Image 1 (spheres, rainbow, N blue to C red):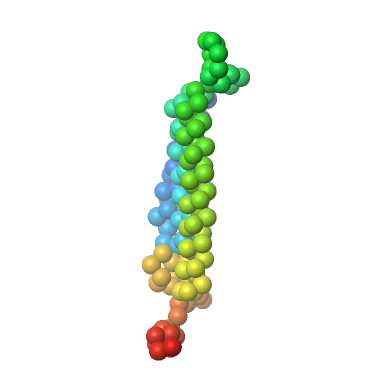
Image 2: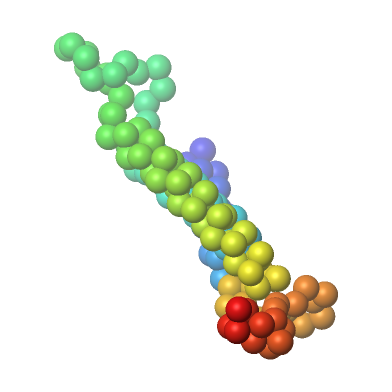
Amino acid sequence: MSLLFALLIGMLTASGVYLTLRAQTFPVVLGLTLLSYAVNLFLFGMGRLASNAAAVLGNQSHYADPLPQALVLTAIVIAFAMTAFVIVLALKTRAELGNDHVDGAPLPGSKLSGPTAEDQKDDATS
């Protein structure tokens, strides 16, 4: 079971890194999301989660460690906020440049193109 768990974390990490290295914004967002899932699973794995264990209350010999759960809950909230922020930035960039390339350059063979030099000149004069 631990081998399967390690393979899952490895696959999520590899997919996240691959997508993060893409030159378009939406695959980068998806890659960061997969990386955050991998980190959350890693934290759960390192915390040695116990099933059917009570929270730290009273004098019990077998209890669940609340630290990994608190860390993962905090990480989920932060990752959700960052994902929403990056998506808004990507949509704004796409609206202004006409493509979703990370440096604004259009992809070869793409029908979408950014503003032309005349459009930029018109914006500068107005």
